[in-house]
Image (cartoon, rainbow over all chains, first blue to last red; front, side):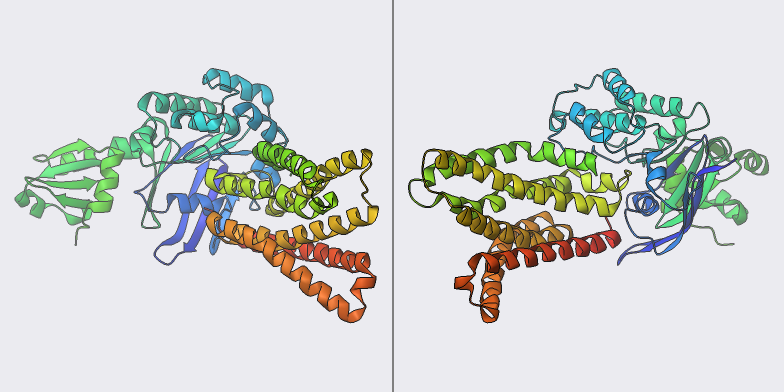
Length: 286
Length: 209
């Protein structure tokens, strides 16, 4: 399987933050969710990969090309948080602008998407709601035959109905396995619905890069008391949190753990809970 | 580059229209008080305010970030702004020529010499000011760059005065006024081009987020 997007050892240092040798891939035909708390480095990773900020180290390969030239950019659709288009323009005027920017601009597809999303073609963007602006940005990203979509916190701030519409579109986009999506979000429930892989970034470092099914089907939270906790093999513990009345322990194979510790309660872990335990939990000392 | 230029023309369209109408009206109004061709000094500078409206709009809307991800190289993004600035200056000059031509048709005396002289001064101030303010628009935040934009016209006028005084050392300007201001125009054009090269160099390395 080829990779539509690959970063290896991506590094960028700011005064108070370091993106530290971030590496992960987006295999062709898949949706990869980039998760992490605010300020974890998701946007910095995307910005560095797209050449918005200068990287200090590392390799970026997009659609098998290390140089992000015009030909590659023609095939990438980017959706940032907000519309990022001049608000004085209307979708119809934006069409004329984009027609002169993208060689592969498909006017018919764009107008069809405007209609599908019920976006008024002649209304100024400044009169649009946040959901409408996001739909417009997605319409643009879908109208130049992109092979790779990159969405940076694109669904945050949208109501569940609009988010669901957008998630359906993203799922349709990857149906032919020629298209791929990298979507960064801290709304992990969205990613549970659509992502094939999850990349978790914390404090500028990749904590894990795993198939989503492995996380949802194998990871679990072991709930027990202090005595049971003391009796656990510490190498089974990824991280743990002491709550008011119980200990919550993140384990990577809940089936195996249930057999090993039959008297404990082990429940499936959501991506949110996994993220929370990694960020706020403590590491067990062997 | 064409798409970015189309975008800027859309943004600045209403402003360009207001500026052109104002220049024409001002031209007719001034015609009875002073030499109308003097409007050519003011016209290019007045017209280029639309370039800064588009720069401010780009920053406010997040377009600066978005356009980097499009198939438009960074040097073309900067090049378009400089081209747009020049187009506006030429448009302003042409707009100022309208009342001059109409007044001339009614028999008022307007010499080619005065049109060339004032046109040269206006365009020189505009090029010098743009050479200062356009790169600064990409170095500073929008508020600071607007201040620089306003100051740059004063700086441009000051530099012209300095250049004329310097040329006067080489030959008497009073006897060769048009030649002296043509030299100033050439220097201004060279400065504008150097400024464009500097802006491209700075913007290539600049983090946009």
